[in-house]
Length: 395
Image (cartoon, rainbow, N blue to C red; front, top):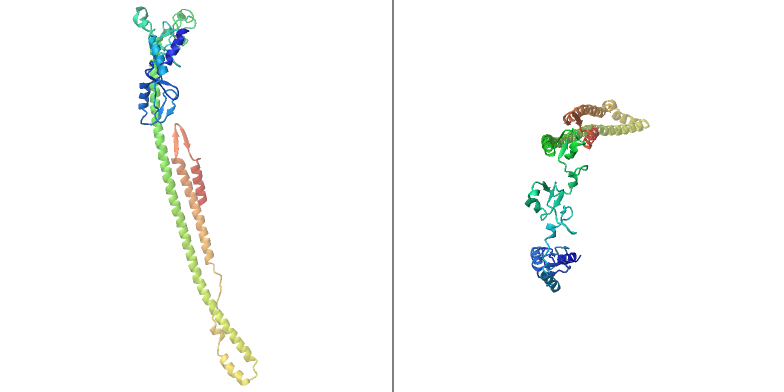
């Protein structure tokens, strides 16, 4: 117990940077102790950043602190040196940590990290305790492997012997004693021989997998290229069809404007002619009304001489020769235009429906993707639904 206490005190006097006894110990504001040269060297590397941190707790300091010697700790370190105790070896390099295999021959609460495991001794050794396996002839034939914590998995649960034989009949690893009882008469070989055979089979499997992998990778690239080409082709088709339909709509709108202008021109010409006839009719009606009044007045005059004189002048005007007859008949020309445009619309709709059948057939046949023996057609996407709606709306 006293030895453990001294070891604990000794660890407290070690610098966490150099892992040696403190030399000219200094204390940071966060309470951790370092050799002056060690902490100064760490902070010299942080000069470019302008922010200095504690190597242990990572607390930062700005600006760089001025460190002073910890006199009390320096005196304690000197006492440690006078007792003859030396600094412990770096824990990170010698002692087993989480995930490491500990030496089976180290004593105490802190065991050193094992470097190798012996399949004969069924134990793991640190660098110090491994030396007998290198120095004494009795250990030189022992099989050493990299330190492993699964040594018990290499031991037969029935005979506590090393698993060195492989039973091909039962397809499991066994020891030599198993070949004399439970596995007697079975097809058995050494574990090394079975490993060689399995390694050969593994190589063949790896070769097949690699070949299949390369084939699939090639198919993947080809499919990716086909998809990219399909996208570019679809985008080009969308742009071309959009431009064509735009031009078609503009052409129809242009023809519509021309028909409107033609109708308005015909309307203007006929209205102008009709208005001329109307004006003429109005003048003739006014003239006839005037003559009718004069004749009416003449018929009621009692002066015979005046009647005879006026009658001669009034009767000389022939109504039948001066008033041409005007026949008004209904105009059916514009009704014929509406009928003709309606027929044109029906013919255009029939033509577009027929062409849409061709377009949809081309889309289905030429945009299919093959995968093995399966033929899949991607026409249920929102793009095709939108295209169908667009065509139906136009038609």
